[in-house]
Image (cartoon, rainbow, N blue to C red):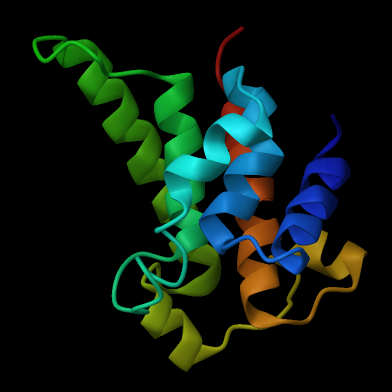
Length: 152
């Protein structure tokens, strides 16, 4: 699937009523060897900064970190290497998101209202101007780029 296809698909998921985390993860499920249906249920409460509170991490970031976790599972408590790997990936994903938007908390993003810019090319290409949709398609774009950098 091309970058544009996943970004457009994430936008469509959000327009259909799914939250930000679900939209990001469902559109990128194939990157973790899953189907959209397999990831939607687990992220139902992660939209709007956890349950719509706008107090915690942006749902678009949560959805991306979820896909990273599926891609790099840390399932054995004593597996320090796996833990380091997923923590490093999650930290880098969040860093890149913050580099663009300045925040990763839902409420902070809503107050700052970052718009479309040269740092959000997928939002520009798709003609997206609504706040959460900009976060969603950019998170997908960042996730794809981060995963593309991994050794084959």
